[in-house]
Image 1 (cartoon, rainbow, N blue to C red):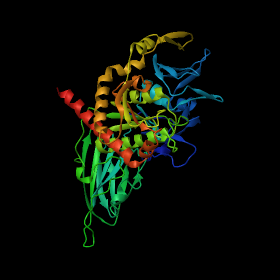
Image 2: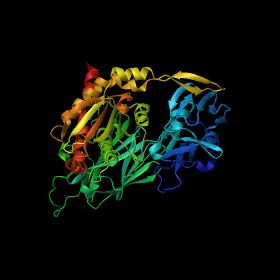
Image 3: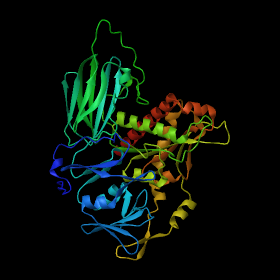
Image 4: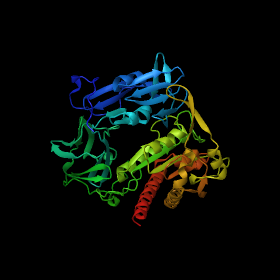
Length: 511
């Protein structure tokens, strides 16, 4: 589909699209809209810890008709298609289909504001041009603009080093050396680099080779080379929906150069020793394309708190970030976090993130507590379903919502708490693999694999597990869990389990 021309963008924006980066200043936040006509900032309004946007601003940008009906609802119309919003309700009707928003619409003076997710969950389904909301980058892509997400990783290889640069969706690139820099030009309209690594993680382990990776312009990265750099070779190959570029940098050898020592563990959690690195261009199976990692708790919900002051919400986020880094960096699999900062995400929204992004695997990370101070060890939980749970779902009743034109209607909601039932066998298989990978590497509880009626798992429409890393109420375990070595051991075990589970799915598909 060809991108439409938008009247709100003037000829002033005919220059090349600029790189998408997180805002460098604290205020005011904005959402950057990118289209073939250029770029435009849209104001973000904060309400609590949620990011909202004005319906009036969206109406002006996307030619929407917004009306406040006499029966209390707000209708948003576009070319005969209608969205019905209700104050104080997170459910909305999109052309007769129910969707859920993380927060209800809010009146601010004379205007209504809606959560940013309104764009992807409500507006995108009725709009005639692609709308791609990338909330972590505060980026909204309109039309057929090609804006790949870029991730950069560095692995020391003794006296040499390896840069791995992933572009998702695929974008070809050209690497050239210009003096003390490598220039990487991407075949794209712009780049989405949420967290440019300056310097790249792991480069401290091979000083003098790669000093920094920086953004040059809308489609170009530069690698600043150190005094020990002598040469490079590069190769690219598609890995599922990602184009992976691998650049091996070689150090100059001199008489005073000491013999290479075994490289220390790179900053990337759980990365193997250099001699054990997998082949750089070995594409993984396509059986798992997206993984959602859910760091439990957050914001005012601290979870368990250890006697030494460690908080569950902080530790789960630390481990989840490491899991995301190793999954994306070494497997080329898309990894999403349900939160990447200190905020409280409702349980239903955590599951919705996985379901809406069609994740193939859901991993929720938590820590345990017990009145017995001696209780210790990791546990893995799968969802449990019993007759009582099914009866509760069956008797949940109908939801009464306003309809366009007035009146109310009863709508039978899909019992999402049964979504996991079709995946419970695969969830149990993955839990068993996790237990095997944990053994010998991290302490396990007396019952390492169990089932429980956990809401965050029951509504997951994919294989799903919840991992309790250990007991913060155990002072010895608190000291272990807060350490990098212990967290890296967990991350390595989770990574190995994902690889085995992926391979098992691929093997089963061929039988």
